[in-house]
Image 1 (cartoon, rainbow, N blue to C red):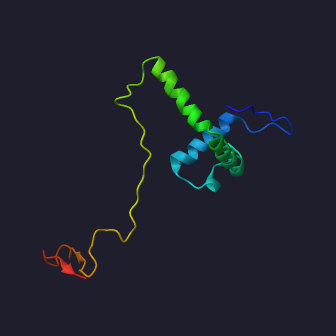
Image 2: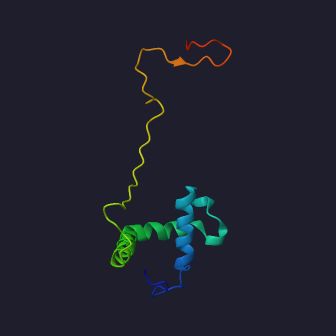
Image 3: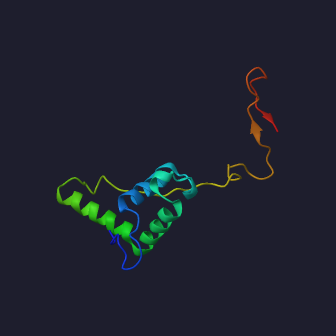
Length: 117
């Protein structure tokens, strides 16, 4: 982790509190501005997150945790992997062809045959 006390100015917020705030945001998916006050000002947490990302700190932390777990035999590389992909289709990409009528279920009591819109 980077030094907490800069060369000049006042000391920064405790790294543990900042990391807990970052993990809260990542876990909940909430916007930065909705960060609870117990983690400190949201602008401090977000600036530290992006600064650390730019410095490559998160990649180094992950590599170190993996190395330590591998040293004591807790990682089976054939089984464990991380895939962070998330692909969302556009709302209009539901699979209907252009020019065809979209069919919808009529619902119970209205007959058992789908009706066209």
